[in-house]
Length: 402
Image (tube, rainbow, N blue to C red):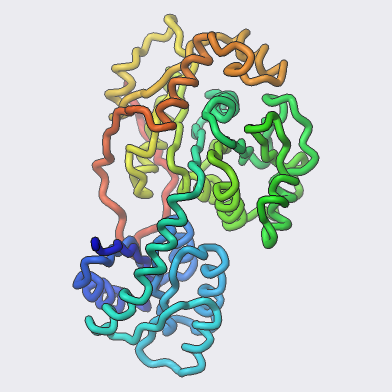
């Protein structure tokens, strides 16, 4: 039987401590070290982002705060097996860590035999969690870091034609207007769902979404700005996880920033449809987005470049843009302002009202790719960032020549 790969994130005391754990893990072929550091908030964010099989948490770093970290991770990342570790600590602190949610304890410095026994014990649980993840619905994020590229229109129409039981999620929390695209009047929103996140089962989730049809539902952004301040990235992460358990597809329309809420959705998406138009500002914005995705470790195979509003009056051609972006544009839509506006004003997705139009056919082509069609892929050449230098940077500014 093939050994189960166990991906791991580490909270350590310092670099020497981290290197000791890393060297021990290198001796077991099952262990795959993803990241590590000595900052609790950064490690928390990495675990939430990467969703590793396991996390090793050193109790020697601010005992009470570490216990709180274990409690948070146990709630927010239930599929990650938590392992507390310490060199010299009290039996009481070890017991507290186990009560907080740690499944195993590892004595430091790590011995090969003890590490092997711990991995032996957590391997079946990690395999079970991985199998559970495979059975969850597919998640697709539609994104552009530049406004005005048509992401909401594309997200709505993709959700309407991708097939299966689908929920469209409006994560443009302060200015979402997806109800207009579907002609529905939601009574509840993401804010209501988040406020009851502790009891999010399938029946309750159905009370927070607005049905457009039997197979397409909308989870709307809040109508008012005030509730947005109470919505945290970890709330969004948990909410999206629950939605994936209830739907075949989760299509997310994102705001045009790399804030923590957007990153929470991008991190767990199976595919990112990166939308651009063929003008210099949008192409530069797409390039910066791709560079940022490279830095946070997304493979290029996760990202589909999609061109909107193609026109014979645009000087730039697709091969030129693809060369600059170092990747294929897998789909495109013609520029047809009146057709798009009519669809939005009617509150009916174009793929439903006029499936024979060129725009609808372009969206259907991308939907087929997302459903398993052959897609050109080009892997990122960037290396994964390593410990103690994690802070995410915003995409840099620079002179772009196309």
